[in-house]
Length: 493
Image (tube, rainbow, N blue to C red; front, side):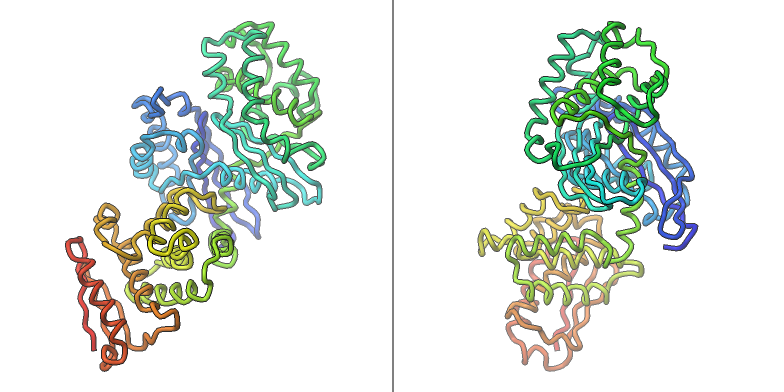
């Protein structure tokens, strides 16, 4: 990463969408521009957990404005991250496909634990270096994240489905503030968050930090009322709670420091924050400057090189957890990568890295069943929390693992308009076939070339006679790729 490079992060939150643009200089990212729009996407989930057309349009309109600002940015310079609302929405693909086209960059839906990890990275990067044990709490629109960490390392992460938008809609839908409504909201929040008490108990951290919307809004209000800047105290929180009760209604709240876009969700945010303070016995909380978007920016730096990419470490951890044969995994990864590199267009390094991860994990389901290990492996990857990975990335790895054997047509939808995926899949399937004896195959003179929709596999003279079983398996590939949009030609010597 060169000094002066511009990087951008888009945070598609349940309440607001945010765009942060920073300039990379000597290992740090300096903010250059920050845009925020109140979209209230979380309010747009109907009873069936589908986003309404109106909510989707609000989101798309905002992304169009962000996209105009990002014109000219390379894909590797932008990370767009979506959180709880789009984790929940049943029709999220409708929003994401159109939203990605409008923004000009793909949108990654991240799991709750991955959101927590990115939040911690954003908070830690903007704090002074210290050995203090940190508790970071991020109350978002539809989820709340807890993280324990030191320096840049998050040790424990958790995500809970409780947030300012969801709780405001459920307990303060008409805007009225009553003691009964607050009591019900806080009891419900504690019921969701209660399982955190065993892990995030007071003796496990030294200083509590609050990040993102609710903590920032409360900090601004208390500072405007004469409190210390950037500090939320239990006494200040009780004072704010009392002021809301006196106002009786959100429209009648008159508090210096309360921004208009926060008014509609202040009741839900305060009730969740009070529940957190009470549950974890917090007396005061520092307002953190960093948040999810800063974490996404620094994650772009880490993803640039394989040795700093957290996903590589995560893959190694999954291999150990599921007792993968490491030697075979590396063997298949090496062969698949060599084949892919021969036929892939320039600047396909990121796709090659993802293929290597899929190859290293291709036998992850073997711990469950040998005969159906590819199906079990795909299921595991589709349902695991893997640090550094977006949900869509894990689904892509799962699709490759599923497609490594058996009929190719089961992945026809993914193959139709994605030549990169087709080449990854063919490379993986060939590597698995060539490594069938669980030893290094003889691939000298073996080549893979692509022209249009045709893949051509060639070997040196005498290879077929020397390795009849491998030749047989490659001929089986010829049959497997029939009736797909892709042709396979074998020139076996």
